[in-house]
Image (cartoon, rainbow over all chains, first blue to last red; front, side, top):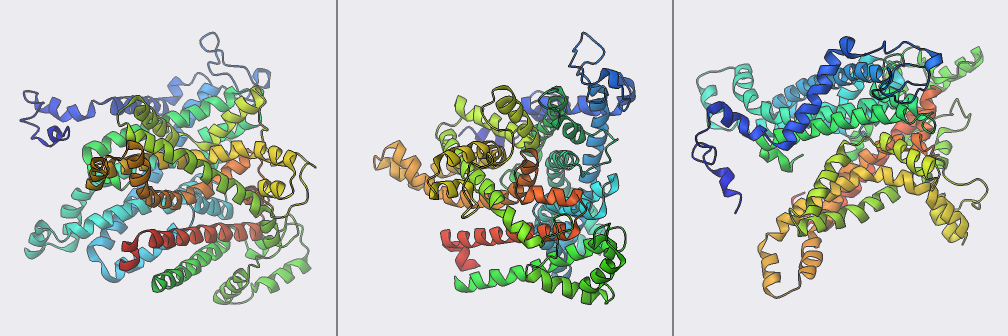
Length: 300
Length: 335
């Protein structure tokens, strides 16, 4: 019975007397959202401000200073150095740039493709829908990550191929949810009304359907971001991601693997960065889903 | 039921066809002439001519695809450059290791995830429930390759309880019968080998099982909570059945569907995960073979493995669908 309170009109409910801004913010002031937001915000800021924050050049090698243990606040190398003497903290900060921007590009591109194909598939139905669903079926027949590994194996490494490889399967969750919603939305009165006054398909799609789908897509996008970060790190860890001279968290972890028994810090910190970022995004995604789209809870 | 099965089985054929077309196109999209790609770098002019002949590279593309398809459907993927052996025999040799790992990981996930989920659901909002929900969050956010390295660091490096990689101590096991080391050593009554194989297996299998365990736990919990609110549970309680019988017998029947769903959903992730886990633990399965093939640009090997992995995935999805139909009559009737 505890659920009844959440169904009450928010104005008449427990938040009565709060200003509209406070009322709008209220659902976001949960532990999950705050913790996730704080962690993610600090990683994004360090990625943006990397040249100002990083104490050293992330690629500057100095074999005389190789494998220094973390000095914490007692020395210049807070998290220590790697096997060729590069400062670990600086590489982590610059790594955030690459890891976060690859993940963000993957999410944006796959989101755009998935929403477009999903909305077209659901709205028009018929032969277009059949064709798109066949493509979905084929791409979905590959185990996740294997399709990315295959593409990178055949086409070679590189930033562009990496983003292509990660995008190729990730548009599908968007397209599925968007297609299902578009199919129900197109039968609703407001869409019929728009059609009856002569609105074009494009206008109906862009002005009437899209705004109603964007929230679900946003929730999927958040979880997709977390998955993309892990996938990028996994591929870089396997040596299939970006070229070795570019620091990413995954490739740092791969570097550390050979030295795990002597220099544990080389493996601990990059992994911790991946874990913390993914955890933060998952926490935010959960909060986002609870607030925007409780229906999705069962689908995801 | 039979019509459903047959229709579902036939439905996978076009998918397999499209998958093979995709891999064929990838092979052609790879930089350089396919003839250079399909034969090793040190090949002579005669080798190149033979390869052109073998792969029919002077023929139109559609003919080439047809040749590719017909040899692939006979499980003939050519010879590996790196090992100079037929690709299929290399794959078959390594396949049991991967299956052993994947099966044990699945069993571990079932043995841990379901009881934990039921336990959490039978005491909602207790400390255990909250702890397991936080644990679930950590589980889905944890990159398994990092967890593997950290466990090796602690358990093999620091405490020295478990080996850090490989599959068995050399020379301990007898000649393979099935290729599944645990099973082989039981069949041969070689208990030292069993103990040894188990020690090598436990860490990789645990790492591989973590994601599935988390998902199973969460889904078992939420569906148990739903079921425990149903009328028939109230009836069972009103009859005076003990709480244990209600939870473990009546409500758990519904867990069958969750098990099938989660195992089906997560199997693909398990396959991809096994490639990484095999790499970290130097596990001699097909995942490691794939990575070695990629490093050596051994295209016949990569092609064969991608097709084998994908077929495996499609078959598991097919089995999952059949199990659904067997367990839930509604699917059978509507399908």
